[in-house]
Length: 121
Image 1 (cartoon, rainbow, N blue to C red):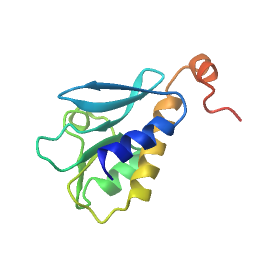
Image 2: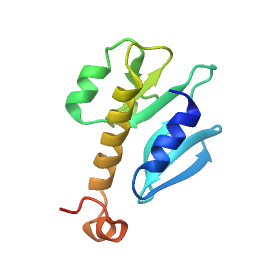
Image 3: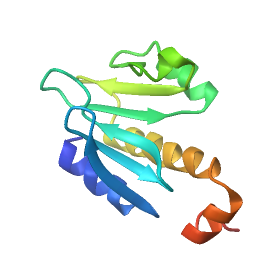
C-alpha cells in the first residue's frame, strides 16, 4: 500500500480527521484520538502504525515486517507498525486499519460516539 492509498482509505472511514505531525507523518484521528499513522519511519519504505486488540498484537509482533510500534508499544499500548515489504496484502492492512478505527472509536464517550454517528446499532 502506498501512502496515497493509505490516506484515501483512512479518509473514507467515518468521522475521521487528518493532520501532518511527528516528522511529517500522516496522522489519522477519530473523535480527536489517533487511530493510524502513515510514516514515522526514517527510511523510504512505507510504514503504517495502528492500534490492535491484544490477540492481534500477540500474533503480529513476531511476524516478518511487523513490530511493536516504536514509542507507543514501549509504553504498554497495543500498537503495531507494519514496515518494509511484507507478504501481508493490502486487504489485511485495510482490515487492521478499520479495526484500529473501531477500537479507538469505542474508547470515545457514548455522547461523542453519538455526535459522530459511530457504533450505532
